Length: 204
Image (tube, rainbow, N blue to C red):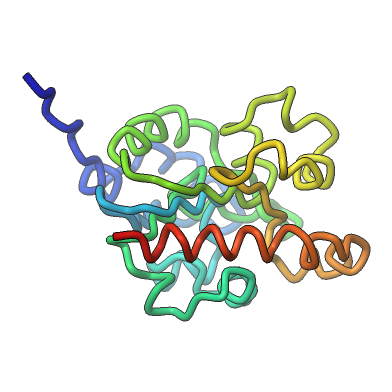
């Protein structure tokens, strides 16, 4: 007898307020607003870090310059990128963590991944390729041994994980210098990642 599929947690996540106290204590003093963007039939997993301030306002992931760069890396227009039946966008924390007193981004609260991540991934059995965007996602998914040396070293070892997993740097404008110093990323990794994404995206 086939076991029933696991319960789909999107509605529960949308109502989550686990970190309300921590968010209220940040410089932004904001309330939780989980940004949930996935459905059970998705084939592609984009594992990011956490929503920024613009995404907190829009309620839609990657509605910022980082999203523009990420879509360009993937060769996807907005219609395909935001197709939840094919693309699951699951950050390490579903809410904007806020800013510290100096105006810097706070890290994704570990509580979010500890509470939700395994349940979410269990509800996405059809993922054919995963993109790990930034160090937080890479450390959680790949573990300490595979991420030794930080993001540059992890992304540099991308062939160890392809074609099912591709570690990527964060597409933030802050990483423009990193991209210039590491031209192999756009010359070698991105064409392979883009081809694999398209293969999975267009699978029957």
